[in-house]
Amino acid sequence: MESFVGQDKKEEKIVARKKSIWVLFGILLISAWVLGSVSQTEAETLATAQPKSLLIEDLTWTELRDAIVAGKTTAIYYAGSTEQNGPGLVLGKHNFLAHYIAQRIAEELGNALVYPIMPYAPNGDPIKKTTMNMRFPGTVDIPPEVFGAVARGVALSAMAAGFKNMVLMGDHGGGQQALKKVAEELNAEWSLKGFHVYYIPDLYFKEKEQMREYLTKHQIPYDEHAGTDDTAEVMFIDHDNRWVRKDKLALDDGKTGVIGDPTKATKELGKMFIDLKINNAVTQIRSLVGEGK
Image 1 (spheres, rainbow, N blue to C red):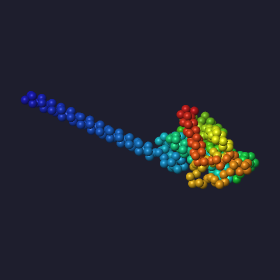
Image 2: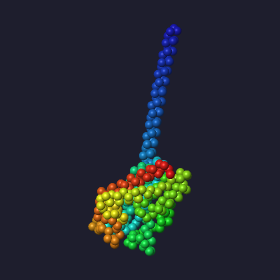
Image 3: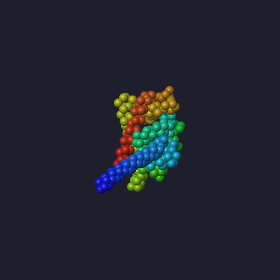
Image 4: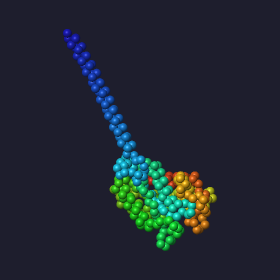
């Protein structure tokens, strides 16, 4: 009798052990399912937060908020200009280039969104017409102090929106010093509080050096305004042939507002010059943001 009782107890222990194993196995399966569901939910949430456009003007305020939370923490402020560019190139040259290049920079950075392009820049006294550009119809002047004030207002608005960094750059020579001053002042005021503003001169000045070196090497006339460089860049982005009047491109004669030779412009050169701008800007932005200066 005792042997049968002992055997029954052994069998009960075996059954109990098996039940424990199955219960543990069930818990592991449920845990794996729950974790998998959470990960999938997080991934879906992150994907949903990624904006459909890199231009904040295309987003609602909730889409912008979610994009910033999801990692779009750098804002790009890119100034263009409305000005004469000779008889063969439209007045909005800088603005069209800025709109295209800013988005390309944001794509390369991966964590940036673009504020609306500033379409005006310092171009000289419109009353006295002290500069070449102001002597031709269509050029718009914004005094440097006003130009800087706009950049400052946009930067502070980006901070209010939740961005951690704002980068300032310009496609036009006028206003570069104003952007630099704004960046220095705002960075001194806000960097210790977690908001940084950086001026990106390499987009403009470094590309100009690289472009001039290339033109000199290939015996193409020096390009200062609406010449090979500007015209080629617009050709590259002008897919609908709206912005370049190829039949009116002519050498600089001192009367047309052109300094350089737009007749040497090609789409291939335009791509090269634009890529230089993008690479220069992205490299400098990553360096400055990474160092947190």
